[in-house]
Image (cartoon, one colour):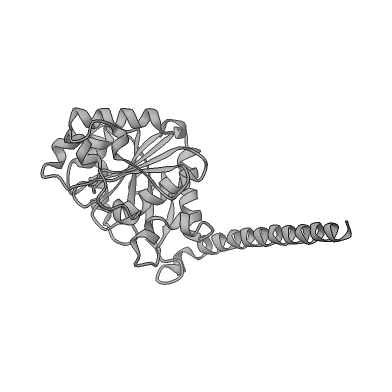
Length: 278
């Protein structure tokens, strides 16, 4: 990633073995102690602790081609950021194939398209509250016939400015770079781009072309992640150290949680004994 694409490397993301869209999109919330959740936190830390980490408040997430998992990455990134206590907004700006409403169980809601088309007057009418604490969501809503025109409109610029004032962090899910111009339009309003690359799916020359498109537009790439690595199966040979490192710390957290639970049980028993004596 760093040698051939010359991009900051943000981290590995494992394959999430679930056919359920909500479980994949909300994995860091449903399984906070999993290896995948820890990997998303690693990406969060890489962005936050970078040289410009404090300036990346509004981030767009895109990929080279379809089916690289960029929506899964965007959703879980928003979740792990919200878990730090920051007020976070996740926006579905993939007007071609919107999916965040399915991943968070929000159907038939007023979305970003309605605001950009002037069907609703305020941003508040598009915001939905997720089950994840500190996380709000703006779905796409209806699929528009002219997505590029809506995303390049004055109302889109006003929308980004408004949410930037209201939230500590904003994650915007965009279409793949190679497919349409939409992600470049949205990224021009944001602070940076996170590029998702699926392991063993995209050729280096295709990735280079995607990066050139972004850089030629004068946009800032925050970094890239390698997604969908099967640490327990087909790719375990190459990444066994990384996998077992996560398992080691996962075991530490489990042991710590069990110790706290044991202490709480002992304290409860001691309190009960005191009541009996009195």
